[in-house]
Length: 185
Image: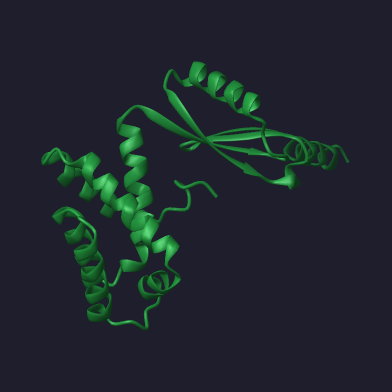
């Protein structure tokens, strides 16, 4: 799944609110840096990951641990407030999704588009460059691709940009042919 499609709507709203506050104070880049540090700490620490994803821990436990992290890292007040609000609202399990959504908002505001590219086999660097070049011509914007391998598409390519999907996979063509053949009977 792409980052965008796997992000819950509520996480997008928290990210948008955080982005708006950061923009108002001209701190959007600093907040992204802090959020990225926080995400790395969470991903690298299984205990912390369990603490924020498990409902068995109390808000006080979560707050205490996060405050210890804030003391060791120079995390901005805006990010601390976001984490505190998520803990208070029992939504701290969404923190990584909020960070991913914030990152997408930052990229979108810089004019960069993220395209999810699905192929049956791993793409070579020259193939990635060609896809980026073609998508850039098509959209007129800077493109960053997230490639994903799904052998079940057999061959071809699927590209998803926002809500738009370009599907040139063999599996889809075979399915369409099967549907047509069923209709011919």
